Amino acid sequence: MKVNIRPLSLPGVGLIAGTRISDRRGYFSECYVRADFVAAGLTNDFMQDNQSCSVAVGTVRGLHFQSPPFAQAKLVRVLKGRILDVVVDLRRSRPTYGRHAAVEIGEEGGEQLYVPSGFAHGFCTLEPDTVVLYKVDNAYSPQHDRGVNWADPELAIDWPVREGDAVISDKDRALPRLRDLPPYFD
Picture 1 (cartoon, rainbow, N blue to C red):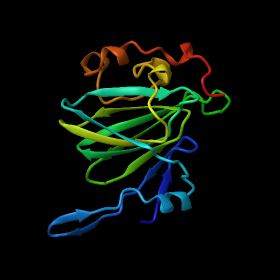
Picture 2 (cartoon, helix red, strand yellow):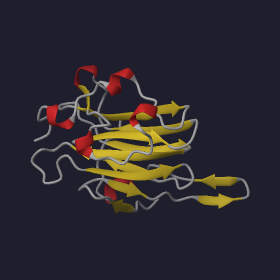
Picture 3 (cartoon, rainbow, N blue to C red):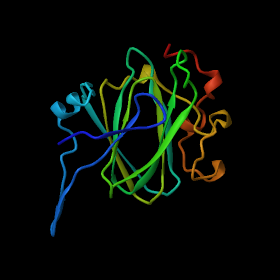
Picture 4 (cartoon, rainbow, N blue to C red):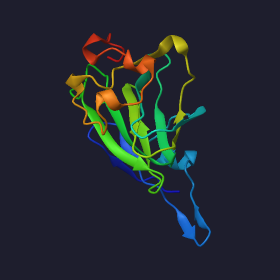
């Protein structure tokens, strides 16, 4: 597996192209080969896989992150359906602080989104019964579980669903705006 990373508009965030071998049965794909990722400069030691299924189109999950020392990098892929995947730079010392990158990924392309620590991450489903799998390089810590409000107007994210129509958890709906976050990543 050769890792082909297309940089997005935020430093360190990249879309990894999927490679598939197809025949009449379907396809085969190597999704993660540590040596190939390391050769491409992604040295994270992924230790946990998380999976979500979102039944309705317009389901929003995020924007989530964990604060240090439990900050996490993520490797996100869609097993079924399509999403608009969004990352927001939370590193206050960077000129890209508060900016976001958005990319559509789905099962057909087999792409993966690499999200370094220091970024909030979230997505909106574009198809019903969407299944998302992501690897993380640090353990989940409820005491360090944080987020920023997905609908914060200062982020100016062009979500494919109106705020009143989004299917979202009460927890995510109550997340603070970016300007109200402490400086977790300096």
